[in-house]
Amino acid sequence: MERENFKSRLGFILVSAGCAIGIGNVWRFPYVAGQNGGGLFVLLYLIFLVLMGVPVLTMELAVGRASKKSAVLGYKKLEKPKSKWHIHGWFCMLGCYLLMMYYTTVSGWMTSYFYKFATGSFESGMTSEQVGGVFNELQSNPLEMVIWMAIITVLGFLVCSRGIQKGIEKVSKVMMIALLILILVLAGNSLFLSGAGEGLSFYLIPDLDKVNEIGLGNVISSAMNQAFFTLSLGIAAMEIFGSYMSKDHTLMAGLIIFPACFSYGVQPDQGPALIFVTLPNVFVNMAGGRIWGTLFFLFMTFACFSTIIAVFENIISFWIDMFGISRKKSVLINTIIILIASLPCVFGFNIWSGFQIFGQNVLGMEDFLVSNILLPVGSLVYLLFCVTKFGWGFDNYLDECNTGKGIKFSKALKPYFKYVLPVLVLILIVQGFIK
Image (cartoon, rainbow, N blue to C red; front, side, top):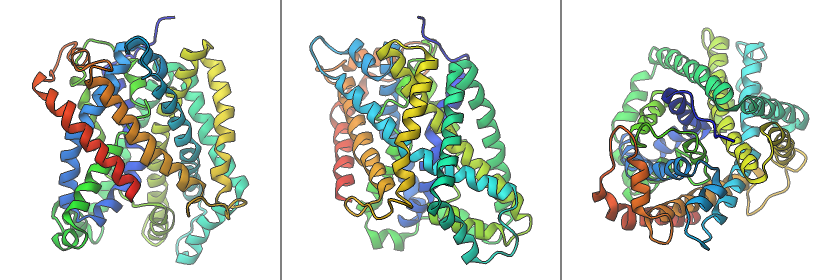
């Protein structure tokens, strides 16, 4: 069966940008920036995004576009006879499943809060204890958490069941345009709030006292880490979209998804406490707070959902390629798998709340396995596959990148890709374990 392609370049750009946005960016970025001196961290983050993010992203896309297959079969088509690179494809799928085992739960929280603000559950004048109690009640109620997790999961698979053009691409276009409008409205409103100037200076002016306090080396490490995980590389989440790309344009030309990411990248939060306690407390005590709260959590829900449908598509395509089943059967099977596999994370906040591994609850352990092991190690495997003679090889990778119209990669980058970039990724892996 001929593989479906994106209907337009814009579709590919918006879907890929949606995958890259996720709650990892809209949740984590400002918190880490605040810990690491603000403006200097942001500058280093942008530098490492170009130095590390762009090369590894093009490698995943190149493997996908050249093979026109999902993770395991993509490796098998491009690897040398009797080599075992394709084993990593199975770990990519493990990473996708693990990611969705807790991502669906957190996405359910966002959707729940959108509903609560829209229906007036948060009332003007609520005390901070009452606002915080809403989140505590949500986490302590396994049935409510399961319902919201199931809603976001089923909706995600329903979109994917329609295929690339009629499902993912069509929905992503509408959702990403809505995201852009929402963020412009929210950002515009925030500029008129008291303290707006301090907020802008935080992002633009380095806090040298904070840098000296934690050490320049730690700032560099954190910026490298954030830049790397921005794109969720290493588990074939981007590779699958490469397999749906045409060869009309070079992969460098396709990398305008980066400015697209930044267009949606105003990140107004720093983790669960701020998102689900502090911000709602602000909303209920400001004029029009119900409206702003509703819009904010609608934005967060869209940001979550964009990543969910991207990773679900990777899982669905894997089953179609590996087992020769139809898209509808793959959707049905994996809907059941994800719904069941997501239950431990839900229960980890209530009926299994006493269960911990190395001091982490279920969500924390799942996130550690994905963020500190499967993503960076997986990216290192893609990197070595594309630049060493034992894998696909640098020349084949470069030819695939430069096929089509647009900006070309230079062969002069070969030493950096072969000798410097693997060391940077390896440092990232080691630091992840140390932290």
